[in-house]
Length: 250
Image 1 (spheres, rainbow, N blue to C red):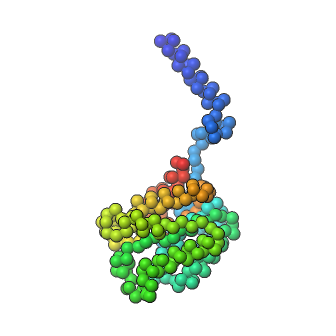
Image 2 (cartoon, rainbow, N blue to C red):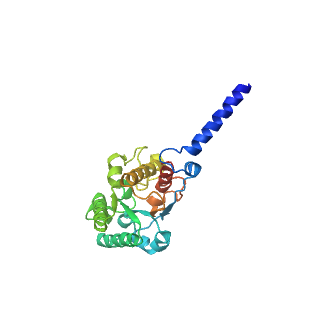
Image 3 (cartoon, rainbow, N blue to C red):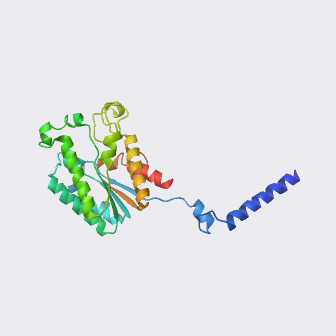
């Protein structure tokens, strides 16, 4: 028994000595500080339901610029094309250019994201088909996303085509596993907003893009409308919440 206690004591002393004198690869000599420091990732969910580009311009100072973000993730346009806040495409482009210019001016990186696909039959229960004339629902969404890509190129900022990803594999429609809300998975005829798994999908796409392009991983503002807002939290069902979990565990 005495011998076992002696061996255990020697093992603990030896391990402690190793940890103090031989830090792991990639860590500084301050082993305890680096290894055990709690990861502090700051992500602000600055999404507001019903917002279009005009609304974002009206609140950009308080909800984005004042936070001095290192990275601003921007998705806006769904309400510009779909709601009673519809604006003409040229106005949308001018507004989006101004939003991006103001964010760049404070030194923040910008990641612009295309708007998501929608389930057209649900949209047409809220708006007459003439609302989307002459281009139609899909034509108008395509035009908006072309503007987003154009603005990203003009302003030399990053662009992530979320719309393509969701259209290709999001199963947008009436199935329960659609990544956009419907009657089966959400008990409502929504057709625009992501499900919880849809928000996970967005967060994974954003996370992978950030890691691939080495964009800032902290002090991030997610600026947009209800698709950014999600449930309004930074802890549960929103893409900013899932992104924070991914970055904290990275």
